[in-house]
Length: 473
Ligand SMILES: NC(=O)c1ccc[n+]([C@@H]2O[C@H](COP(=O)([O-])OP(=O)(O)OC[C@H]3O[C@@H](n4cnc5c(N)ncnc54)[C@H](OP(=O)(O)O)[C@@H]3O)[C@@H](O)[C@H]2O)c1
Image (cartoon, rainbow, N blue to C red):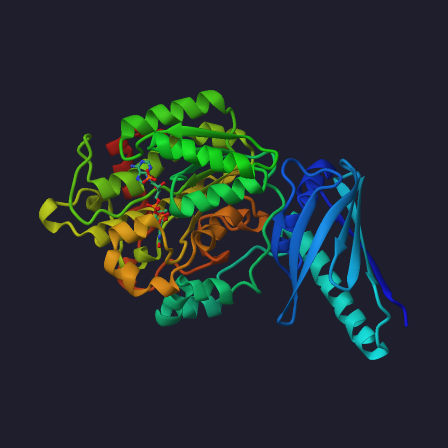
């Protein structure tokens, strides 16, 4: 019986060969498109080169199969060859990229060689599964590069789960993240060379997103308010860097004056910004005002992302196909938002309510921008990370943090959809929506939270008046 399996597939895409090559040469990215791969890490430091090694763990059924891959040939951007070693077999992955009139053609050949002869029945079953996995892998790789054939939409099952509250809440936990993994749309290959600005990257979800974006080769500007934390983060990200560059910017985002100065600096340094991620946020249990006289929760969670996004609009327009990712919260399901709520009276203040309203406001902005900014090629996306174990959650809701501790997601799980939205071609075809775990979710589960186009415009007018941006957006 043969002890070698071989399969060859081709993909035609409108992406340039060098961009695709850079992505594929970071072989640990294979976890995104190979359904059998669930863990991948680069073992060698620096840029991928001949000799670079990767550890990839595959899973067949419940059995983990650890593999070590080495780049054995590399001619950028045409040819990439890797050799993988498992316990009883070797894999040779040979990838060739050739230019076409509209982009490039990727030819992918995999050869599996077994160290021992196999029994004929096991070999036949194995061969059948290998063909199936190879077809799925290539389909996922194609989708990751070009997006799906049809734009994503809110599925009736998801809508029902959201409305039924309990399944919706289970979806917020680490279980929800793990259960949805198999059917999750694949991530894009297109991070390299893109300039991304991320606020609140010094802690929790933002820090995990920063690590992943840098690992995927993005050029990243991280905004934080604490110089020491930014310095530590820069050291950490420097070790993970994968071809892109990293910068840090310091600003207290609860203050409009600081947001303006930050936007000025960013606009001077970067003519184009491909992705803005408004992640910084906080929940204050006690009423307080900023030095500019704005209630702190609204200032940090709604006014600041609004002002920063609007000020950066020229750089987002200049990018051609930019996107804004707003980190909202499932808490917003409990509240509606109106312009008059920007200004809570101290006696009426309740931290979780103010937080939920601010996040609802952020989703309303996303819906409005999704409509109005399509002509500029700008996608606007709101997401919620689920319930995530972060310093922010522990400080603001200590009792809740203690009670649901075993169910909380890791910061990486919380950041997954942010990172996905930053580059997915699919997401860009469904602008103005609200996402969890790479899927569109319902924006309302209670009738009292509904809002109209007029409510959204009134909110924007009030934000314009507060920030002095009137008539500019
Ligand atoms: N954790 C959850 O379960 C959960 C659920 C739903 C939504 N979210 C949202 O996810 C986002 C990240 O939260 P997290 O849980 O990762 O919290 P976190 O650990 O407290 O991180 C929040 C980040 O925002 C920054 N930040 C806060 N106020 C700022 C200000 N005035 N100026 C500049 N930066 C400021 C923080 O800076 P410092 O490092 O200096 O504090 C930190 O980097 C927030 O928008 C939050 O509302 C979280």
